Image (cartoon, rainbow, N blue to C red; front, side):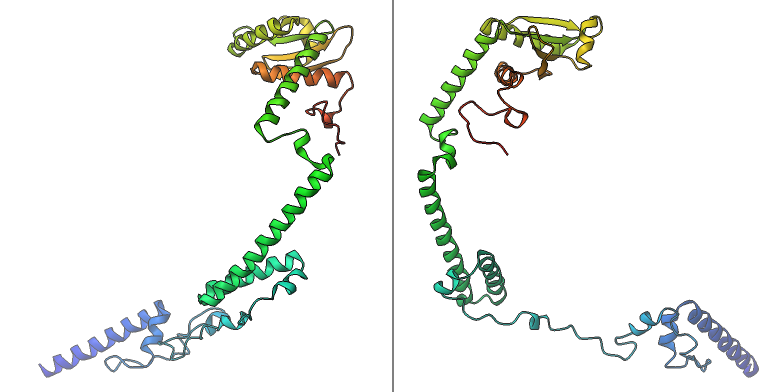
Length: 294
């Protein structure tokens, strides 16, 4: 029986050593852990044999409890953000460029969020108060300039108050209706349609109102049947085109279904454009808008 125990002990020792060796070969980390001790009188593990395979950079990263090396300390980032003094006084701020003031406000805002002390928050709002007062001063100067230089004042053509807006609309409608009435014998509308087009049916109703209101001639051309429609080179229906009588000049004034108001605006602009009264850059400008377009 004693001999049997010895044989069993040798067999267990051999199996354990084989198991540990295989585990070390399969798991480098386990090999390192086991290198500092023996297991059941098993073979000693040479750490140089089971060192982690990899680049030198990875080898240098082996720090911590298991490698008996202290972790690298987190660098002190506060050294990059020194304490700020009290902000400049008003005379000094007035001498700074606006971009410099903007940078100061940003720095003192971040500083107040970092320190969270009342005096630092007060510093930030003092700078904000200076910026608000400078903005108000700029607006005061701008109000004076708008009065002294009416050519720069948009109120002359785009009033923002209700009476001015009502007057602008009335003048606009008067100019538009008068011009469309004058041009009804010099121009006409052609609408390109095709059979089965539901949008074309909707546009017919809009063109009917336009014809009744301004007395213009409106003609339909089927793009699939009329050879005359080929000159306009379009497959989209409905497309409404304005032509000048006795001229080869023409221009689209509606693509798809448009409202009566949009159709009137586009026809009015097309008339002025084809007569050379406006350029492409001035296409939407009204006659009262005399400024130069750049």
